[in-house]
Length: 596
Picture 1 (tube, rainbow, N blue to C red):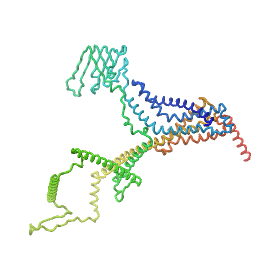
Picture 2: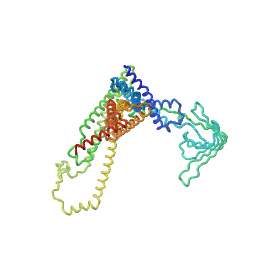
Picture 3: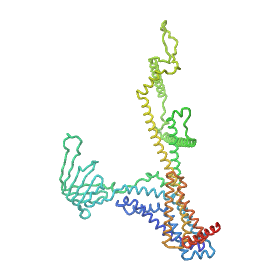
Picture 4: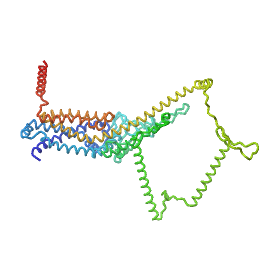
């Protein structure tokens, strides 16, 4: 590595580490303020908060890296330009692109490291962050009874103390007990003084009450004629109440499997599996809709099938084949395990009754089963014959009537058929049919039934449409989480293309102009990122374009700044724009003179 590369890279690393720590601290503060009321005041140890802060620092690093690269590269080349070091570099025959190379190579490696962090480290940290944050939220606040205020932190009790004496002393105590699921102030205890102190490693709290009265009343029933409820009043000199704080004020850690479906804790391979699962559910829902819709329109589907599209049918066939193969493998594995157990028990002389293959019928059992099956068939056939003989013949069926000459010999079967009517309806028949339709309200009933069916179909279609839209929205969100792992890493390089040439153009170091310009461009980048992701979530654009929208918008600015920096353009000096305006005016005058 040449001395020039060491000089430029050394002047970049210091501001980069400093700005990264500052930006990370600012984003950490913003994140902690979101959950301030939920995580503080719970009486947690320092190490719990340190663990949570460490998780937050790692999870927000992908957002802090682009801003740190932008600010540090702008400060580096601003300092080089302010101290005329960049001018000396150019005067020695070294181009600006050559001067940008050491930091550019570092930023490329940094982008690759950011991608690895987004794909492997951040998902695991997010998993632990979600679990710890949820446990802190569910934990009850620390036991802190204040004078003159009702305290309801202990489940089933409301405690009010008018005065606190020392660390454990209490005076003028009022306690409402709601233990046992009772509602209302039916159990009240008054005490002149008392002491509340923890014991057994602060897992339990003992409340000692002195000189008090306990009032207890049964709940009044709804009946007016019921007798009055029982009311008890008990006086005491000393009364002790023990509260179990083990499950109330201790932090219980939730298993990490509870967050296994969140896309923020998945790497790219797991996100692809999630996309395939969502696509399978979506395709099954669409296929079921086509199958169920066919029965809704019997008139239009009488002579043809309302079949789903080819791509949906093919996907359904593939998914069913995969399910069958998975089920077959599971059954084969189960059978192999059963055979292994059976062989092991056979070697040891034991008999496994739970093995399905060992449940074989003996010869006598088989004969008894066949005999009972024949008897059931005979009984059922006899019952069918008796029911058939008891039925009277109807029109259109075969009639068997005995002849008058011989009762033993039955006549030949005679078939009676109803000939279809070909004559049109008479005016009298039409009037009778119309009177039935109008008089009995058949037409109105038909219209009402049709309207009810239409409303029911509309509601069903709305529900199905909502389910399909939810699946599609989840699919798009998984795609956004997939592409974000690339865009957040590539944003470091895009910010370098903006910051380094801007520093060479501005030629101002320190924390003045560079900080202002960096904040402006980072706000633009953040707004464009949020806008593109929102478009992608709502389905207004493709998720790939939505996630890369901010990069595509800012990349031309970076290339433009690189071009202007190579020309030593004075973009941020008023003389540059005044000379440009004068040249435009002169050209307009020339064009007017030619026109005249």
